[in-house]
Length: 548
Image 1 (tube, helix red, strand yellow):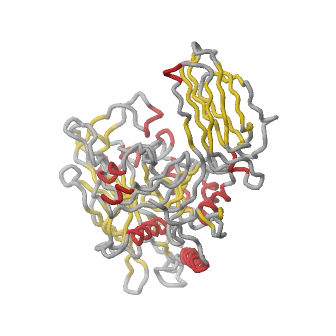
Image 2 (cartoon, one colour):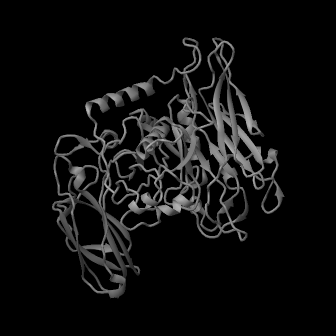
Protein backbone atom coordinates (compact mmCIF):
# COMPACT_ATOMS: atom_id res chain seq x y z
CA UNK A 1 0.00 0.00 0.00
CA UNK A 2 1.48 3.29 -1.02
CA UNK A 3 1.26 6.13 1.47
CA UNK A 4 -0.17 9.34 0.11
CA UNK A 5 1.38 12.45 1.58
CA UNK A 6 -0.57 15.66 1.88
CA UNK A 7 1.83 18.53 1.34
CA UNK A 8 1.27 21.94 2.88
CA UNK A 9 0.45 24.22 -0.03
CA UNK A 10 -0.27 27.87 0.85
CA UNK A 11 -4.00 27.19 1.08
CA UNK A 12 -3.39 24.33 3.49
CA UNK A 13 -1.10 26.53 5.54
CA UNK A 14 -3.88 29.08 5.76
CA UNK A 15 -6.32 26.37 6.83
CA UNK A 16 -3.91 25.21 9.51
CA UNK A 17 -3.48 28.77 10.78
CA UNK A 18 -7.23 29.22 10.88
CA UNK A 19 -7.59 25.93 12.73
CA UNK A 20 -5.10 27.01 15.37
CA UNK A 21 -6.77 30.42 15.64
CA UNK A 22 -10.14 28.70 15.99
CA UNK A 23 -8.73 26.62 18.86
CA UNK A 24 -7.17 29.64 20.59
CA UNK A 25 -10.49 31.48 20.38
CA UNK A 26 -12.65 28.48 21.28
CA UNK A 27 -13.04 29.60 24.89
CA UNK A 28 -16.04 31.72 23.94
CA UNK A 29 -18.70 29.32 22.79
CA UNK A 30 -21.20 29.32 25.66
CA UNK A 31 -22.55 31.73 28.23
CA UNK A 32 -22.94 35.48 27.86
CA UNK A 33 -20.07 37.54 26.60
CA UNK A 34 -18.60 39.77 29.25
CA UNK A 35 -20.12 37.83 32.14
CA UNK A 36 -16.91 36.08 33.16
CA UNK A 37 -17.54 32.73 31.52
CA UNK A 38 -15.66 31.39 28.52
CA UNK A 39 -15.98 27.70 27.74
CA UNK A 40 -14.05 24.99 25.96
CA UNK A 41 -16.42 22.07 25.52
CA UNK A 42 -15.04 19.26 23.32
CA UNK A 43 -18.51 17.73 23.05
CA UNK A 44 -20.34 20.89 22.03
CA UNK A 45 -20.99 19.76 18.44
CA UNK A 46 -21.63 16.09 19.17
CA UNK A 47 -25.06 14.85 18.10
CA UNK A 48 -25.38 12.04 20.62
CA UNK A 49 -28.21 10.45 18.68
CA UNK A 50 -26.35 10.03 15.40
CA UNK A 51 -22.60 10.12 16.09
CA UNK A 52 -20.73 6.81 15.88
CA UNK A 53 -18.58 5.32 18.65
CA UNK A 54 -15.28 4.24 17.10
CA UNK A 55 -12.75 2.38 19.25
CA UNK A 56 -9.20 3.53 18.66
CA UNK A 57 -5.73 3.60 20.19
CA UNK A 58 -3.19 6.42 20.26
CA UNK A 59 -0.27 4.24 21.42
CA UNK A 60 -0.38 0.56 20.56
CA UNK A 61 2.48 -1.68 19.54
CA UNK A 62 1.94 -5.05 18.02
CA UNK A 63 2.27 -4.92 14.25
CA UNK A 64 5.21 -3.93 12.15
CA UNK A 65 5.45 -5.05 8.52
CA UNK A 66 6.66 -7.17 6.93
CA UNK A 67 6.56 -9.53 9.91
CA UNK A 68 3.51 -8.70 12.03
CA UNK A 69 3.89 -9.62 15.69
CA UNK A 70 0.11 -9.67 16.00
CA UNK A 71 -2.25 -9.51 13.06
CA UNK A 72 -4.49 -6.43 12.74
CA UNK A 73 -7.28 -9.01 12.58
CA UNK A 74 -6.77 -9.59 16.30
CA UNK A 75 -7.53 -5.94 17.05
CA UNK A 76 -10.44 -5.90 14.60
CA UNK A 77 -11.97 -8.85 16.45
CA UNK A 78 -11.56 -6.89 19.69
CA UNK A 79 -13.81 -4.16 18.30
CA UNK A 80 -11.24 -1.62 17.11
CA UNK A 81 -12.20 0.20 13.92
CA UNK A 82 -9.48 2.91 13.90
CA UNK A 83 -6.06 1.24 13.84
CA UNK A 84 -3.16 3.73 13.94
CA UNK A 85 -0.47 1.29 15.13
CA UNK A 86 2.68 2.89 16.54
CA UNK A 87 6.04 1.20 16.67
CA UNK A 88 9.71 1.98 16.87
CA UNK A 89 13.01 0.66 15.49
CA UNK A 90 12.36 2.42 13.23
CA UNK A 91 9.79 4.90 14.53
CA UNK A 92 7.72 5.27 11.39
CA UNK A 93 4.12 4.67 10.30
CA UNK A 94 3.07 1.05 9.79
CA UNK A 95 0.39 0.85 7.07
CA UNK A 96 -2.35 -1.74 7.31
CA UNK A 97 -1.72 -4.76 5.05
CA UNK A 98 -3.46 -4.57 1.70
CA UNK A 99 -5.25 -7.91 2.21
CA UNK A 100 -6.62 -6.64 5.54
CA UNK A 101 -7.84 -3.44 3.85
CA UNK A 102 -9.62 -5.49 1.20
CA UNK A 103 -11.25 -7.73 3.79
CA UNK A 104 -12.29 -4.78 5.96
CA UNK A 105 -12.86 -1.79 3.63
CA UNK A 106 -14.32 0.23 6.52
CA UNK A 107 -11.15 -0.05 8.59
CA UNK A 108 -9.65 3.33 9.44
CA UNK A 109 -5.94 4.06 9.80
CA UNK A 110 -3.61 6.94 10.54
CA UNK A 111 0.15 7.35 10.26
CA UNK A 112 1.56 7.17 13.76
CA UNK A 113 4.78 6.24 15.55
CA UNK A 114 6.22 6.39 19.03
CA UNK A 115 9.24 8.69 19.26
CA UNK A 116 11.93 8.40 21.92
CA UNK A 117 15.37 9.66 22.95
CA UNK A 118 14.57 13.30 22.28
CA UNK A 119 16.43 15.83 24.38
CA UNK A 120 14.34 17.21 27.25
CA UNK A 121 11.37 14.85 27.00
CA UNK A 122 10.42 11.21 27.31
CA UNK A 123 8.43 9.23 24.78
CA UNK A 124 5.71 10.79 22.65
CA UNK A 125 3.35 9.77 19.86
CA UNK A 126 2.28 11.87 16.90
CA UNK A 127 -1.18 10.81 15.79
CA UNK A 128 -1.79 11.21 12.05
CA UNK A 129 1.76 12.37 11.30
CA UNK A 130 4.24 10.91 8.82
CA UNK A 131 7.11 11.92 11.10
CA UNK A 132 9.68 9.12 10.90
CA UNK A 133 12.92 8.59 12.75
CA UNK A 134 15.33 5.87 13.48
CA UNK A 135 16.67 2.62 12.29
CA UNK A 136 16.22 -0.81 13.73
CA UNK A 137 18.00 -3.99 12.80
CA UNK A 138 18.83 -6.98 14.93
CA UNK A 139 21.81 -8.96 13.72
CA UNK A 140 20.76 -12.22 12.12
CA UNK A 141 23.17 -14.49 13.94
CA UNK A 142 22.86 -18.00 15.33
CA UNK A 143 25.46 -17.90 18.05
CA UNK A 144 23.37 -19.96 20.46
CA UNK A 145 23.48 -22.81 18.01
CA UNK A 146 26.99 -22.44 16.59
CA UNK A 147 28.94 -21.15 19.63
CA UNK A 148 31.82 -20.08 17.40
CA UNK A 149 34.16 -17.10 17.86
CA UNK A 150 34.70 -14.61 16.34
CA UNK A 151 31.29 -13.24 15.29
CA UNK A 152 31.18 -10.53 12.61
CA UNK A 153 28.22 -8.61 11.22
CA UNK A 154 27.68 -5.59 8.97
CA UNK A 155 24.75 -3.18 9.31
CA UNK A 156 23.91 -1.28 6.13
CA UNK A 157 21.81 1.71 5.07
CA UNK A 158 22.84 3.99 7.93
CA UNK A 159 23.16 7.78 7.82
CA UNK A 160 26.80 8.89 7.77
CA UNK A 161 27.69 11.96 9.82
CA UNK A 162 26.39 15.31 8.51
CA UNK A 163 27.48 18.32 10.62
CA UNK A 164 24.28 20.19 9.64
CA UNK A 165 22.04 17.34 10.83
CA UNK A 166 24.22 15.45 13.30
CA UNK A 167 21.31 13.70 15.04
CA UNK A 168 20.68 11.60 11.94
CA UNK A 169 23.98 9.77 12.38
CA UNK A 170 23.57 8.87 16.09
CA UNK A 171 22.75 5.22 16.85
CA UNK A 172 23.08 2.89 19.77
CA UNK A 173 24.50 -0.58 19.78
CA UNK A 174 22.40 -2.74 22.07
CA UNK A 175 24.34 -5.75 23.34
CA UNK A 176 22.87 -8.69 25.25
CA UNK A 177 25.74 -10.88 26.45
CA UNK A 178 25.16 -13.94 28.57
CA UNK A 179 27.87 -15.55 30.65
CA UNK A 180 29.13 -16.36 34.09
CA UNK A 181 30.56 -13.92 36.61
CA UNK A 182 33.66 -12.23 35.22
CA UNK A 183 33.04 -13.31 31.61
CA UNK A 184 33.94 -10.74 28.97
CA UNK A 185 34.27 -10.40 25.23
CA UNK A 186 36.25 -8.10 22.97
CA UNK A 187 34.42 -5.80 20.51
CA UNK A 188 35.70 -3.80 17.54
CA UNK A 189 33.53 -1.40 15.53
CA UNK A 190 34.41 -0.15 12.05
CA UNK A 191 32.46 2.66 10.34
CA UNK A 192 31.29 4.35 13.55
CA UNK A 193 32.82 6.17 16.52
CA UNK A 194 31.59 6.38 20.10
CA UNK A 195 29.78 9.69 20.67
CA UNK A 196 27.38 11.53 22.96
CA UNK A 197 23.70 11.30 21.88
CA UNK A 198 23.05 14.82 23.20
CA UNK A 199 26.10 16.78 21.97
CA UNK A 200 27.01 14.50 19.05
CA UNK A 201 30.66 14.95 20.06
CA UNK A 202 33.08 12.04 20.10
CA UNK A 203 34.05 10.43 23.39
CA UNK A 204 37.86 10.68 23.52
CA UNK A 205 39.00 9.40 20.13
CA UNK A 206 35.73 7.58 19.60
CA UNK A 207 37.55 4.51 18.39
CA UNK A 208 36.15 1.18 19.61
CA UNK A 209 38.83 -1.46 19.10
CA UNK A 210 39.31 -4.64 21.10
CA UNK A 211 37.19 -3.16 23.90
CA UNK A 212 36.53 -5.50 26.78
CA UNK A 213 32.82 -5.70 27.60
CA UNK A 214 31.40 -7.71 30.53
CA UNK A 215 28.62 -10.25 30.10
CA UNK A 216 25.47 -8.21 30.65
CA UNK A 217 23.06 -5.95 28.77
CA UNK A 218 24.87 -2.85 27.51
CA UNK A 219 24.10 0.15 25.28
CA UNK A 220 26.90 1.99 23.47
CA UNK A 221 26.11 5.16 21.51
CA UNK A 222 27.96 5.68 18.25
CA UNK A 223 28.11 8.21 15.42
CA UNK A 224 28.07 6.58 12.01
CA UNK A 225 30.90 7.78 9.76
CA UNK A 226 29.74 5.58 6.89
CA UNK A 227 26.52 4.03 5.65
CA UNK A 228 27.96 0.68 6.73
CA UNK A 229 28.96 -0.30 10.25
CA UNK A 230 30.77 -3.57 10.93
CA UNK A 231 31.05 -5.11 14.39
CA UNK A 232 33.38 -7.92 15.45
CA UNK A 233 33.27 -9.91 18.70
CA UNK A 234 35.98 -12.21 19.98
CA UNK A 235 35.55 -14.37 23.09
CA UNK A 236 35.96 -17.72 24.73
CA UNK A 237 32.91 -19.81 23.71
CA UNK A 238 33.16 -21.66 27.02
CA UNK A 239 32.58 -18.40 28.93
CA UNK A 240 30.03 -16.63 26.72
CA UNK A 241 26.69 -18.43 26.65
CA UNK A 242 24.62 -15.95 24.62
CA UNK A 243 25.28 -13.06 22.25
CA UNK A 244 22.62 -10.86 20.66
CA UNK A 245 23.15 -7.40 19.27
CA UNK A 246 21.35 -4.75 17.24
CA UNK A 247 21.60 -1.14 16.08
CA UNK A 248 18.73 1.19 16.94
CA UNK A 249 18.03 4.89 16.65
CA UNK A 250 15.90 7.56 18.27
CA UNK A 251 15.21 11.27 17.75
CA UNK A 252 18.41 12.70 19.35
CA UNK A 253 17.49 16.34 18.94
CA UNK A 254 15.91 18.99 21.19
CA UNK A 255 12.25 18.29 21.82
CA UNK A 256 11.21 21.64 20.33
CA UNK A 257 12.84 20.74 17.00
CA UNK A 258 11.34 17.26 17.13
CA UNK A 259 7.86 18.66 17.79
CA UNK A 260 8.15 21.09 14.87
CA UNK A 261 9.27 18.31 12.57
CA UNK A 262 6.48 16.02 13.75
CA UNK A 263 3.77 18.66 13.35
CA UNK A 264 4.87 20.61 10.28
CA UNK A 265 7.57 18.50 8.63
CA UNK A 266 11.15 19.61 8.09
CA UNK A 267 12.68 17.31 5.53
CA UNK A 268 12.12 18.38 1.94
CA UNK A 269 11.68 16.36 -1.20
CA UNK A 270 13.21 17.38 -4.53
CA UNK A 271 10.39 19.80 -5.27
CA UNK A 272 11.06 21.67 -2.03
CA UNK A 273 7.80 20.68 -0.30
CA UNK A 274 8.05 19.78 3.39
CA UNK A 275 7.21 16.19 4.23
CA UNK A 276 6.69 14.07 7.33
CA UNK A 277 4.35 16.48 9.15
CA UNK A 278 0.67 16.02 9.99
CA UNK A 279 -1.45 14.52 7.24
CA UNK A 280 -4.35 16.94 7.79
CA UNK A 281 -3.84 20.52 8.98
CA UNK A 282 -6.94 20.36 11.21
CA UNK A 283 -6.38 16.92 12.74
CA UNK A 284 -4.03 14.85 14.84
CA UNK A 285 -1.31 15.92 17.24
CA UNK A 286 1.17 14.92 19.92
CA UNK A 287 0.54 12.85 23.05
CA UNK A 288 3.00 12.78 25.95
CA UNK A 289 3.42 9.14 26.90
CA UNK A 290 3.48 7.71 30.46
CA UNK A 291 5.05 10.92 31.73
CA UNK A 292 6.01 11.43 35.35
CA UNK A 293 7.52 14.85 34.60
CA UNK A 294 6.89 17.83 36.91
CA UNK A 295 3.83 19.97 36.17
CA UNK A 296 5.98 22.85 34.92
CA UNK A 297 7.66 20.60 32.36
CA UNK A 298 4.33 19.24 31.10
CA UNK A 299 2.90 22.77 30.85
CA UNK A 300 5.91 23.84 28.79
CA UNK A 301 5.18 21.08 26.26
CA UNK A 302 1.41 21.66 26.16
CA UNK A 303 1.81 25.41 25.72
CA UNK A 304 4.40 24.98 22.97
CA UNK A 305 1.68 24.39 20.37
CA UNK A 306 -2.09 23.70 20.61
CA UNK A 307 -1.44 20.54 18.61
CA UNK A 308 0.31 19.08 21.66
CA UNK A 309 -2.84 17.42 22.89
CA UNK A 310 -2.35 15.90 26.32
CA UNK A 311 -0.97 13.07 28.44
CA UNK A 312 -1.59 9.39 29.03
CA UNK A 313 -3.71 8.88 32.13
CA UNK A 314 -3.70 5.09 31.95
CA UNK A 315 -0.88 3.02 30.47
CA UNK A 316 -1.05 -0.74 31.05
CA UNK A 317 2.66 -0.81 31.93
CA UNK A 318 2.12 1.27 35.06
CA UNK A 319 -1.60 1.80 35.40
CA UNK A 320 -2.57 5.25 36.65
CA UNK A 321 1.01 5.98 37.70
CA UNK A 322 4.42 4.46 38.41
CA UNK A 323 4.62 1.67 40.98
CA UNK A 324 0.93 1.62 41.77
CA UNK A 325 0.63 5.33 42.46
CA UNK A 326 -1.92 7.69 40.95
CA UNK A 327 0.87 9.78 39.42
CA UNK A 328 -0.51 10.10 35.87
CA UNK A 329 -4.07 10.58 37.13
CA UNK A 330 -3.11 13.26 39.66
CA UNK A 331 -0.88 15.01 37.14
CA UNK A 332 -3.89 15.41 34.84
CA UNK A 333 -5.80 17.38 37.45
CA UNK A 334 -2.75 19.39 38.49
CA UNK A 335 -2.31 20.52 34.89
CA UNK A 336 -6.02 21.30 34.46
CA UNK A 337 -5.99 23.40 37.63
CA UNK A 338 -3.63 25.82 35.87
CA UNK A 339 -6.28 26.47 33.20
CA UNK A 340 -4.27 24.61 30.54
CA UNK A 341 -6.20 22.39 28.18
CA UNK A 342 -5.01 18.78 28.50
CA UNK A 343 -6.75 15.75 27.01
CA UNK A 344 -6.39 12.36 28.69
CA UNK A 345 -5.43 9.18 26.81
CA UNK A 346 -5.95 5.55 27.84
CA UNK A 347 -3.65 2.99 26.22
CA UNK A 348 -2.36 -0.58 26.43
CA UNK A 349 1.08 0.28 24.98
CA UNK A 350 2.86 -3.05 24.37
CA UNK A 351 0.11 -5.05 26.06
CA UNK A 352 -2.52 -6.36 23.69
CA UNK A 353 -5.00 -8.36 25.76
CA UNK A 354 -5.32 -5.93 28.64
CA UNK A 355 -7.11 -2.58 29.16
CA UNK A 356 -7.12 0.95 27.75
CA UNK A 357 -8.94 2.46 24.76
CA UNK A 358 -9.87 5.82 23.30
CA UNK A 359 -13.44 5.93 21.96
CA UNK A 360 -13.82 8.52 19.21
CA UNK A 361 -17.17 10.22 18.58
CA UNK A 362 -17.46 10.65 14.81
CA UNK A 363 -20.16 12.05 12.51
CA UNK A 364 -22.25 9.47 10.61
CA UNK A 365 -20.07 7.60 8.12
CA UNK A 366 -22.71 6.90 5.50
CA UNK A 367 -21.70 8.34 2.15
CA UNK A 368 -18.20 9.31 3.29
CA UNK A 369 -15.00 7.97 1.78
CA UNK A 370 -12.44 6.22 3.96
CA UNK A 371 -10.18 9.27 3.64
CA UNK A 372 -12.98 11.58 4.82
CA UNK A 373 -13.65 9.30 7.78
CA UNK A 374 -9.95 9.16 8.64
CA UNK A 375 -9.86 12.94 8.60
CA UNK A 376 -12.83 13.01 10.98
CA UNK A 377 -10.95 10.66 13.29
CA UNK A 378 -7.89 12.93 13.19
CA UNK A 379 -10.10 15.94 13.99
CA UNK A 380 -11.69 14.09 16.90
CA UNK A 381 -8.26 13.54 18.44
CA UNK A 382 -7.29 17.17 17.77
CA UNK A 383 -10.43 18.55 19.44
CA UNK A 384 -10.82 16.05 22.27
CA UNK A 385 -14.02 14.54 20.90
CA UNK A 386 -13.42 11.18 22.54
CA UNK A 387 -13.42 9.55 25.96
CA UNK A 388 -11.28 6.94 27.69
CA UNK A 389 -12.52 3.40 28.26
CA UNK A 390 -11.19 0.69 30.56
CA UNK A 391 -13.49 -2.25 30.03
CA UNK A 392 -13.85 -5.25 32.30
CA UNK A 393 -11.94 -8.23 30.91
CA UNK A 394 -14.09 -10.94 29.34
CA UNK A 395 -13.39 -14.44 30.71
CA UNK A 396 -14.61 -17.98 30.15
CA UNK A 397 -16.04 -20.33 32.80
CA UNK A 398 -12.51 -21.10 33.99
CA UNK A 399 -11.62 -17.44 34.43
CA UNK A 400 -9.32 -17.30 31.41
CA UNK A 401 -9.36 -14.10 29.37
CA UNK A 402 -11.15 -14.43 26.05
CA UNK A 403 -12.02 -12.36 23.01
CA UNK A 404 -13.03 -9.50 22.81
CA UNK A 405 -11.07 -8.93 26.04
CA UNK A 406 -11.64 -5.33 27.23
CA UNK A 407 -14.34 -4.35 24.72
CA UNK A 408 -17.42 -2.72 26.27
CA UNK A 409 -20.55 -0.96 25.06
CA UNK A 410 -20.71 1.06 28.27
CA UNK A 411 -20.65 4.64 27.02
CA UNK A 412 -21.57 8.25 27.52
CA UNK A 413 -24.82 9.04 25.74
CA UNK A 414 -24.88 12.71 26.72
CA UNK A 415 -22.38 15.28 27.96
CA UNK A 416 -24.12 18.59 27.46
CA UNK A 417 -24.09 22.05 29.00
CA UNK A 418 -27.55 23.41 29.81
CA UNK A 419 -28.48 27.11 29.94
CA UNK A 420 -31.21 28.81 31.91
CA UNK A 421 -33.95 31.00 30.42
CA UNK A 422 -31.62 34.00 30.28
CA UNK A 423 -28.99 32.12 28.31
CA UNK A 424 -26.59 31.70 31.21
CA UNK A 425 -24.88 28.38 31.83
CA UNK A 426 -26.70 26.42 34.51
CA UNK A 427 -25.63 22.77 34.63
CA UNK A 428 -23.77 19.90 33.01
CA UNK A 429 -26.09 17.09 31.94
CA UNK A 430 -24.58 13.60 31.70
CA UNK A 431 -26.07 10.21 30.91
CA UNK A 432 -24.59 6.77 30.30
CA UNK A 433 -25.88 3.51 28.88
CA UNK A 434 -24.73 0.18 27.47
CA UNK A 435 -23.72 -1.55 30.70
CA UNK A 436 -24.11 -5.31 30.95
CA UNK A 437 -27.29 -5.46 33.04
CA UNK A 438 -26.50 -8.94 34.36
CA UNK A 439 -22.79 -8.71 35.12
CA UNK A 440 -22.62 -4.98 35.93
CA UNK A 441 -26.08 -3.72 36.92
CA UNK A 442 -24.86 -0.82 39.09
CA UNK A 443 -23.81 2.58 37.74
CA UNK A 444 -22.01 5.46 39.40
CA UNK A 445 -21.17 8.87 37.90
CA UNK A 446 -18.57 11.18 39.44
CA UNK A 447 -17.93 14.83 38.59
CA UNK A 448 -14.34 15.93 39.15
CA UNK A 449 -13.41 19.62 39.30
CA UNK A 450 -10.42 21.66 40.45
CA UNK A 451 -11.82 21.14 43.98
CA UNK A 452 -11.71 17.34 43.65
CA UNK A 453 -14.67 14.97 43.42
CA UNK A 454 -17.58 17.42 43.62
CA UNK A 455 -20.57 15.15 43.09
CA UNK A 456 -21.22 11.39 43.15
CA UNK A 457 -24.53 9.93 41.95
CA UNK A 458 -25.48 6.27 41.75
CA UNK A 459 -27.63 6.55 38.65
CA UNK A 460 -27.22 6.75 34.90
CA UNK A 461 -28.65 10.23 34.24
CA UNK A 462 -27.25 13.09 36.31
CA UNK A 463 -27.33 16.87 36.35
CA UNK A 464 -24.38 18.69 37.89
CA UNK A 465 -25.26 22.24 38.93
CA UNK A 466 -22.46 24.64 38.07
CA UNK A 467 -21.31 27.07 40.76
CA UNK A 468 -21.76 30.78 39.96
CA UNK A 469 -19.85 33.83 41.14
CA UNK A 470 -21.44 37.23 41.78
CA UNK A 471 -21.28 38.17 38.09
CA UNK A 472 -22.88 34.96 36.92
CA UNK A 473 -19.60 33.40 35.79
CA UNK A 474 -18.67 29.79 36.49
CA UNK A 475 -16.49 29.18 39.54
CA UNK A 476 -15.17 25.77 38.46
CA UNK A 477 -12.04 25.89 36.32
CA UNK A 478 -13.02 22.61 34.73
CA UNK A 479 -15.37 19.67 35.07
CA UNK A 480 -14.62 16.18 33.87
CA UNK A 481 -16.76 13.09 34.31
CA UNK A 482 -16.02 9.52 35.33
CA UNK A 483 -18.61 6.75 35.13
CA UNK A 484 -18.50 3.15 36.31
CA UNK A 485 -20.61 0.05 35.72
CA UNK A 486 -19.96 -2.52 38.42
CA UNK A 487 -21.36 -5.78 39.87
CA UNK A 488 -23.22 -6.27 43.13
CA UNK A 489 -20.60 -8.72 44.38
CA UNK A 490 -16.85 -9.22 44.13
CA UNK A 491 -14.25 -11.61 45.54
CA UNK A 492 -16.49 -14.54 44.52
CA UNK A 493 -19.66 -13.47 46.26
CA UNK A 494 -18.74 -10.75 48.74
CA UNK A 495 -21.31 -7.92 48.54
CA UNK A 496 -20.12 -4.73 46.82
CA UNK A 497 -22.27 -1.86 48.05
CA UNK A 498 -22.53 1.64 46.65
CA UNK A 499 -21.17 3.00 49.93
CA UNK A 500 -18.10 0.78 49.73
CA UNK A 501 -17.61 1.56 46.05
CA UNK A 502 -17.82 5.33 46.63
CA UNK A 503 -14.89 5.19 49.05
CA UNK A 504 -12.59 3.72 46.41
CA UNK A 505 -10.25 5.71 44.15
CA UNK A 506 -9.69 4.82 40.50
CA UNK A 507 -6.73 2.54 41.19
CA UNK A 508 -8.72 0.58 43.74
CA UNK A 509 -11.70 0.39 41.39
CA UNK A 510 -9.59 -0.92 38.53
CA UNK A 511 -8.44 -3.77 40.79
CA UNK A 512 -11.93 -4.95 41.82
CA UNK A 513 -12.14 -8.62 40.86
CA UNK A 514 -13.70 -12.01 41.47
CA UNK A 515 -10.40 -13.88 41.18
CA UNK A 516 -6.73 -13.33 40.48
CA UNK A 517 -5.15 -13.97 37.11
CA UNK A 518 -2.06 -16.06 36.65
CA UNK A 519 1.34 -14.74 35.73
CA UNK A 520 2.75 -11.28 35.29
CA UNK A 521 0.85 -8.33 33.85
CA UNK A 522 2.47 -5.03 33.09
CA UNK A 523 0.69 -2.78 35.54
CA UNK A 524 2.00 -4.85 38.45
CA UNK A 525 5.60 -5.22 37.33
CA UNK A 526 6.69 -3.67 40.64
CA UNK A 527 5.13 -6.62 42.47
CA UNK A 528 5.79 -9.70 40.36
CA UNK A 529 5.12 -12.11 43.23
CA UNK A 530 1.45 -11.20 43.40
CA UNK A 531 -0.72 -12.23 40.44
CA UNK A 532 -2.77 -9.44 38.92
CA UNK A 533 -6.56 -9.36 39.31
CA UNK A 534 -8.92 -9.90 36.39
CA UNK A 535 -10.92 -6.62 36.34
CA UNK A 536 -14.73 -6.75 36.47
CA UNK A 537 -15.62 -3.02 36.37
CA UNK A 538 -16.22 -0.90 33.26
CA UNK A 539 -14.68 2.58 33.63
CA UNK A 540 -15.11 5.57 31.29
CA UNK A 541 -13.52 9.03 31.52
CA UNK A 542 -14.62 12.17 29.68
CA UNK A 543 -12.33 14.93 28.49
CA UNK A 544 -12.46 18.11 30.60
CA UNK A 545 -14.90 20.92 29.95
CA UNK A 546 -13.03 24.08 30.87
CA UNK A 547 -14.21 27.49 32.08
CA UNK A 548 -12.35 30.80 32.15
